[in-house]
Image (cartoon, rainbow, N blue to C red; front, side):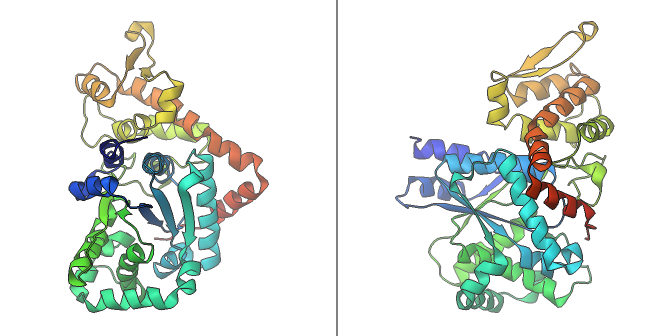
Length: 358
């Protein structure tokens, strides 16, 4: 049994930011019988490693704390945002593919549920749309427009009327799903804060806790966020071994540089956060080097690894070679699943044939 403090610390490690920490600790210290965390995702193309491995790591941490995790399969939202060319059948095919990836990637499904927005909203439409209308009434258009980042858009984009609905609906999702914790990326922060503001405006006693995870960098220099529409910017969950090796080899990784280094970003947020990976390696990471280059060197935590890299004690080539080997091992079960499971194989074939639209 974990203590409330232990649960708090493990859950807090998921987030780059937590609003508010004292509320998260109080939640785990409470007698609430069921704590719910949620994340919504647009089915919009192949799944990259941040959405795959990092999400599996984060969900497993929260479910270990006794949290029930609800995935909101936002198919209607992807339709509003014109993803997959606005083809709902394609969007739902991508959604099924993404669920298959998480199952194969080591996500503990015991305390996880997947809810499709198109189905759940129709089941309780009066409740849902009443929430949407009330949130819309309590906010002006300028406040809603500041949330367009959640769709990968900006306030200056030529938005359709449907896209203006999107932030208000996503805010309503939080209350519709009875979420105690919003566990989404930093790019979704603005709408989660809108939900907390709505609680004040509507005199709701309990505000959702915002536990925002880090946004993984793209592999190309200057990319703050990996992009599905730029295949070389990210490792995808069913990339071949050759693809992984090639992408990591070309990745931006200046000697001694920590900031804005995507290779180190992978080590920090995926490699060193994977309990399963470290259990297979007796709790340490080994960078493989030739005897001429000093031989293999091992690290038990990210801080010591980062310090060695910053001091130019590790060469980018060695760091990249080891990372590619690790990532290939981590996604091999996903490759195997999509190769050996006929239904999954068919889903992947269809998804790969779809054009990704912004």
